Amino acid sequence: GNSVTQMEGPVTLSEEAFLTINCTYTATGYPSLFWYVQYPGEGLQLLLKATKADDKGSNKGFEATYRKETTSFHLEKGSVQVSDSAVYFCALSDAGFQKLVFGTGTRLLVSP
Amino acid sequence: GAGVSQSPSNKVTEKGKDVELRCDPISGHTALYWYRQSLGQGLEFLIYFQGNSAPDKSGLPSDRFSAERTGGSVSTLTIQRTQQEDSAVYLCASSLPGNTEAFFGQGTRLTVV
Image (tube, rainbow over all chains, first blue to last red; front, side, top):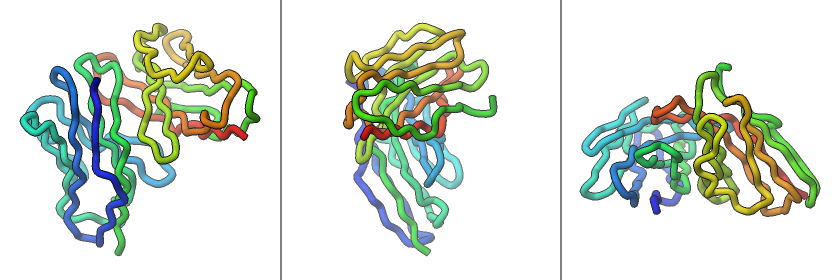
């Protein structure tokens, strides 16, 4: 079945450092790919998405590119801020979008 | 409504009791999803509704779990004879038909003692 694997955390960075959180997936067909973020004390919210191969999703300085050849959707940001501290979840949905399959989440801690 | 609303936000119950968790989706969202987030675990899919029907119940962990949706709107997740392993945050999400973005509620934190 469909599955998502993402790097374990926590990821600890200093402010202005470069961020990469790895995500790979296993799926039949052509899924859509997502990054969701959960800030402390808040609900899950969509950060960015890509619906087909080579698409790049971007939002709030974060980017991820849908790589079909490597079945990956790595999250990157050039310069993190303390306010980016959160748990990040990679997810995919099947073609019918009947459910989102999530990775286990990666906690990011950014220190000043 | 403005967003997905879940109630209660917190629930403490004794082992063996039944609980009901409620989800009020965004108005007009025909798709509704229930997920469970346990400590140290990822997000586990439970059930999906399209309108009032549930084409995918594959994630319900046991027959103690059931869910219904009425009027294509509010959904209730019921857990019978709760066990300690049911302790988790139960998340509800909704989306427009065919839309790829799901909007999540704040969740219900269930603690079984």
